[in-house]
Amino acid sequence: MRDAGATRRRLLEAATAEFAAHGIAGARVDRIAAAARSNKAQMYGFFGSKDGLFDAVLAEHFELIVDAAPLDGADLPGYAVALYDAYLAHPEVVRLATWSRLERHPVGDLFADGVDHGAPKVAVVAAAQRDGHVDPALDPGDVLSLVVGMATTWSPASILLAAGPDEAAAVHDRRREALAAAVRRAVTTGS
Image 1 (cartoon, helix red, strand yellow):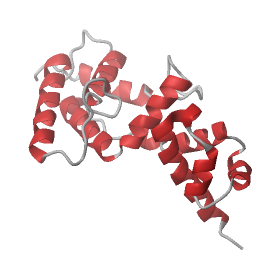
Image 2 (spheres, helix red, strand yellow):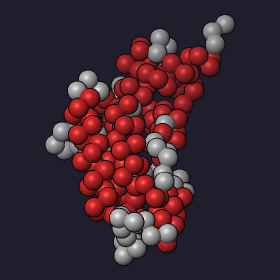
Image 3 (cartoon, rainbow, N blue to C red):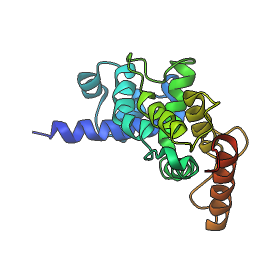
Image 4 (cartoon, rainbow, N blue to C red):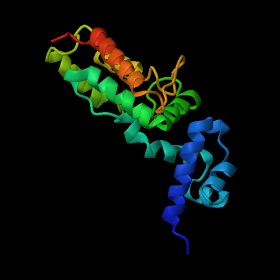
């Protein structure tokens, strides 16, 4: 008897690649099943539908999407750079989040589960404002969105230029420095 856990794992891995490349609407269950060395019946048995499979893929990558880097309110430039590196190392996570935004949740929270996933990070930013590290005139939720948005400047969701891991280290270093400087100037108090 085959290992159901291994089959499920292969389906999730194949679906991650397929959804990241083609989105929900463009993904094909035949390609997912073939890449996983499985079949559609098994896929539907585990996940119920293509949408159910996407939900499982997104849930599996949830922590990496939400917690791609640790947030230190006293070092938002460092947080932005850590996000840059996380997005460079895991471009599929940005692609999955982007497809979810485009095809499912064009406004509001990325995850439609009724949980405010940004609340803990917003609280960290608010504390950094009280401690004098972040401009208190800015809404802490807006600060978090700005910093994350700036960090995605060269991600697969970029409109102008997406970074790749095979680019020269000097290019990545230059971008990290520019990102840190921009975040510092935009939202910190310089203290």
